[in-house]
Length: 160
Image 1 (cartoon, rainbow, N blue to C red):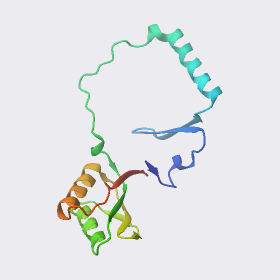
Image 2: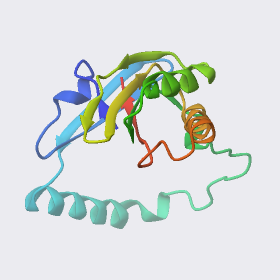
Image 3: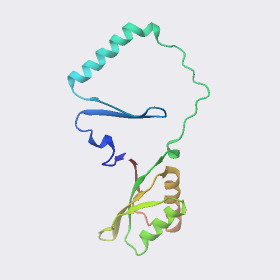
Image 4: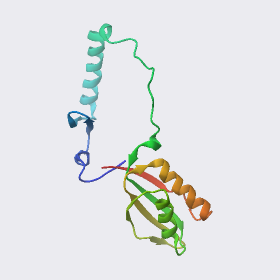
């Protein structure tokens, strides 16, 4: 995922790991710690071995797995950045943005076309929506103008 600059995870760098948890009742929490290196890795492995040696008999053996449902990734809502590489023809940006709009997806920004001989490369950033709608828009583009897409669009969610 891409991470917006104003997101607290954007400031995590180098060998630091971070987990952000959002809880219904207590709000947002951030856990930070070393994530790589021989000492850090060895320490976590030894801690896991000690935990298992001490508490293995007390851990639950039978986890209830009934009535669990998984949500397909296509159903999560995120803003997305979609990069298109197309034939460089007039109206291509309008065709693509119209297909996105036909899926009731709001567009945040559209980049300027970068032209490369007979190709156009540009990106569309969306407001939060479901990936299934992005995929539907791409299918619509392919149906309306077969062969206009030189490559499959790159679709990257944005963590906001």
